[in-house]
Amino acid sequence: MKKWGVVLLGVFITGSVFAGLAPWSGAPNTTIQTWSFGTDQAIDILPNDGGIGNPYGDPLANVEYSTPFKPYHDLHLDHSGVWQIEDWIEFYVPNTDNTAEGTFKEVWIEVVWWAPEGAADFFSIPGIEGGVNLVGPQGHIGEGEYFRSTYSFILEGPNPTEEFIFLVPESCTVYVDEITIETICVPEPATMVLMGLGGLLLRKRK
Image 1 (tube, helix red, strand yellow):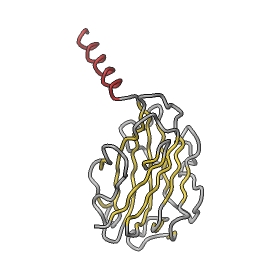
Image 2: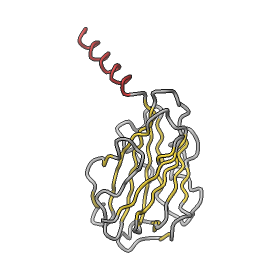
Image 3: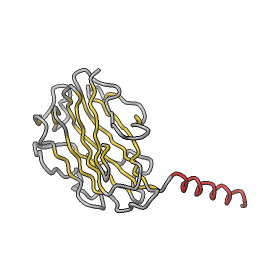
Image 4: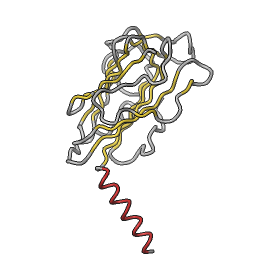
């Protein structure tokens, strides 16, 4: 089975505008950015909304390392703009400056893609403790051959102030139609558990 992967670079090395992927979409300390590649622009591509989904700066995509842009793909003619990826796509996501000890970053990525042999599990991120989770079912879009795949993973703190995300094919060519990246900076799990216990105690007293 052919696979492709993601490498993430943050403070440490590990690697159509949209309603949102994650259950926390739109909450404080979040970002959302979507690229659907409607043109052959290859460098410093702003997301579909121009960047307003990210309050910390302008997220950018670079596909200059890939070949070539296709106005459409024979297997999915209603997709306007598909990049044929043989090297990589790079995404830059500026983020919150909350780098306090105990914070961490949760990242969700959705990719609309096709590969010649397909793949059921094509993401691998070396160095990410706990690995990458496939969120929900992965399946074809409508009657076309393209997949819509959503993944989530955790970047352990302190919280990086920016992320560089590379989508990298592994021994195959991948056609990418759309990418959505969401992030949230959250407190450490122990703090969240204590907050939950406090809520339970409050309800019990009532």
